Amino acid sequence: MKGKVVNMKNYKMELDNPNLENPALAFEELRGKCPVSHTDGFGGGWNIIGHEDIVKTALDPNTFSNAGAIRYPHLPRFPFEADPPLHTPYRKVMQEFFTEKKMKAFADKLRPIAIELLEPVINRGYGDIAKEVNYPLPVRGIMAFLNLPDQDWPRIMHWAEELYYRAAEGNLVARKAAADELEVYCREVVAERKENMLNPQEDLLSKMLHNSSESDSATVTENLVVGTLHLLLTAGHESTTSSLGIIINYLATHPEDRKRLQEDPALIPNAIEEILRYESPVQFHPRTVTKDTEIQGQEIKAGEKVFLQWGAGNRDEEVFPNADQCIIDRNTKKSLVFGSGIHKCIGAPVARTQLRVVIEELLSRTDSFRLNGEIHRIGFTRYGVSSLPLLIEK
Image (cartoon, rainbow, N blue to C red; front, side, top):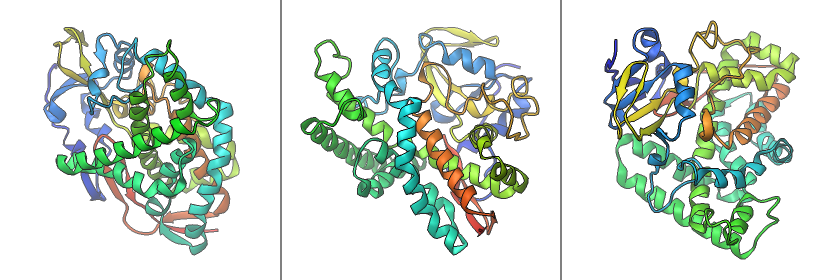
């Protein structure tokens, strides 16, 4: 069966929906029958749902371009919205800030923020952890990572949420207003950092600006630094917010796994990867086809789009036996939670650090926690939890 149309109704943005189904499940019946299906959603394109097909596609930027993902033509957000050769040197400049050593230093900055946000909820014994912790923590974390003023985080969170929610609602006027306001902020930050540079070995923005001033590094321009900051302040935290909701909801409803992690905290990083494989926060990304090609016998024309369905690939039984089960000590090496190929999320170490620190602190400071009311889910290109009331015992 080729070319079957999938409506992708589960991808329609739904706010405060307690019954929103995991979008990846929409592809289960197609996996063995129609590995490449068509959708009219998101401008139309082809869904790639098999793990092997997704990885092959992600590894071929010459045929499946991500440069077409540029949302703001005057403000490209590298390295995500670029292909080689522009992508390669730019990502190389950034890569040194996501090493294990840098993440240890970042964790030291982040832990006091996590404790500050968690303590009121834990001491009270109840609260909506999604609203009180999951939403503010990642944006405050990325602000700390970028050496930006912590007090600016409410504005950043507002703009980021406006960008995602208003676009999903079709309110492009409000979305553009938020994007423009965020751009003004980013340009002010970059101008100030250019005037008062920090140690380029310790500050990502200063490093990029330093390289932009070198004659042999013309690929890193000041405008691209602004675009990268714009990306980091939005995509850099919203998927982490969704991930926290997914993980904490899972632990609240699976006490045996929660207790196991409390008894063996060393298992927390792997458990995080597995829970997010089981319920992937970022469900898909598009690529633009540059030349006529074929996937699983389906002809795809130049100019068409393919959607790399990360969530569906993470449920592929050929790669993950018993994929519909969450097994917290499973080998997650092939997980697609942070993508694959040259555009695999460069900020994954930051996200992993944030998730680990919050879960470590939550588990170490509580005896147990469970749901205390109805949870509310959101869906779109991300899948997460917008409201998560807990009852906590410590």
